[in-house]
Each structure stands twice: as C-alpha cells, then as structure tokens.
Image (tube, rainbow, N blue to C red):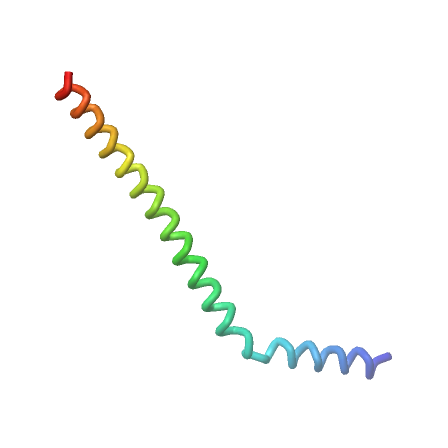
Length: 65
C-alpha cells in the first residue's frame, strides 16, 4: 500500500514539474486578453459611429426641410 502511494506521489510530482504546456496556456491567456480588449474597443467605436450618423441624419433632415 505504501509503495503504491509513493508511486502515485512521484507521478504527481513529475506532472507538476513538467513545463511543456505552459507556453500554450500563456499564449491562450494573451489571446483571450487581446480579444477582450478588442471587443471592448469595438463597442465604444460602434457607439461613437452611431452617434455620428444620428447627428448627420438630424442635420440633413433640418437642412432639407
């Protein structure tokens, strides 16, 4: 029983010491952060464009009549 627990402990330590997948996780987090920032920026840009077109529409409406 003790040898089985010791073997499991050694395997767990080996898994924790491996750094092979670390770069992939870091890149995924970086891409997620960039995507979140781009989404936030696009929402702000969309609001600004909508406001600009509303102002243009209002000014054209008053100029035509």
